[in-house]
Amino acid sequence: MVFMTRTIVFLFVLLLSIKAFAFEIVIKLTGHEEFPGLISVDAGAGKKFDRLCLLGQEAYGSIDLNFIMALAKQGVPQGNYKISSAFPEEQWPTSSFSANGALRLLPQTKFAQKFLRKLGKKGLALHAKDFYPLAGKMTTNPKMVQFFSDQLFERLAKRWGTLRISNWDMGRFHDFYRRNTKSDKQWEVQVQGSILEQVKNICAPLKVQRKPDGPLE
Image 1 (cartoon, helix red, strand yellow):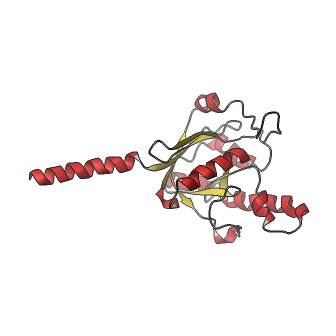
Image 2 (cartoon, rainbow, N blue to C red; image 1 turned 45 degrees about the horizontal axis):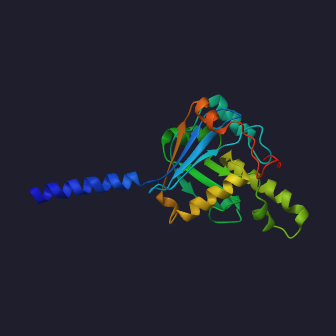
Image 3 (cartoon, rainbow, N blue to C red; image 1 turned 180 degrees about the vertical axis):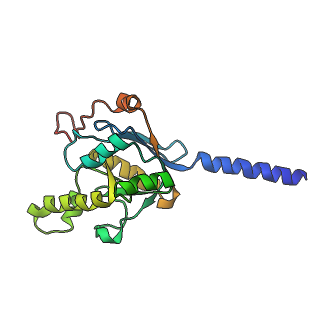
């Protein structure tokens, strides 16, 4: 009896430890067109990546203003998500998440599924300003890179609710993700609602520069 009790206690503590070190991505969305939200990533053992700000209507480059405005009017697709590969019909140049690609998230809860389905979306996707390196694989003509980059964004936005971060942040996020990922399935992804002030206090002003006095993204 004592042995069984100790075993149960051990398993309970083990489960708590596993939960404590769960690999988690949390996306807090405000539904605001200028400050859409904030991303934090926790790989356990003190490995964290936070203060990753989503860009809004004033951002340069590829951005789906229609989706951002839909969130502003209709709310936030809260719930649990899992990481997904690109669908075959997207004809995406890479099979996995790359620094210049997109991290796709499929909703697992009915509320989020229904919410996004009404908007004609399969899920959410995190992406950066452009897809130049990927587009470069699709053409040998440098003058066509911009065209193919725009085409990739159109393919993405057609099926996914796109959430934009800067190229610089995407590079840092991708490095962190790859260093701490053995399988995409290890990550738990949550989308939560957030009040505007909490995000604005961290992200304002949203003037993203790769270097001081450099061009805005």
